[in-house]
Image (cartoon, rainbow, N blue to C red; front, side):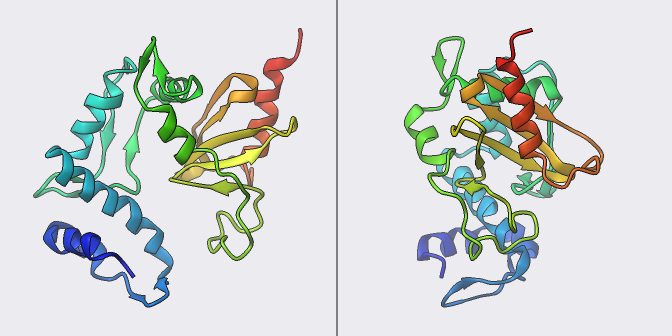
Length: 213
């Protein structure tokens, strides 16, 4: 069940009721297939109410400007009336700016010597300590995949036995970060490119950084 605080936030945010009112839950938790989209929406509500800012404005101030993004980005809205962002998707960057965010994360949350994201938070949120079990992989995207998952970040073990991490989007778009190989990879495209599971491929590409030419 959702906590009373989260339920209160949802009830007060009537503008996104079209997304939330169809999510069914029982004592065991959410069971409708699309319910995994709920968590980012609730996070967006919490961010709005704790910062007093739209999520996009907060992101621009705290991340976008600090990493020196080179191009404008866009973020689809859940509500034109309130400007509430579509938290689970619809965030569009040019590749170089994805790479800059990846580089900031690669360097433990730092950009040009400034701590943009705390190291403590990265330790808690990015690299999963364990792989997901079959019981936890309840979506086709993760079923049978050797990966861990934390707060919207996935992790795999590379050929050196070290942990890489990545964010995955629609059409198999990936921001892949390998601290072991000091490498950031951005993969974009209109489709998956006939590759069923990109992370092992990206892990191999990252390993090429160590090859002496």
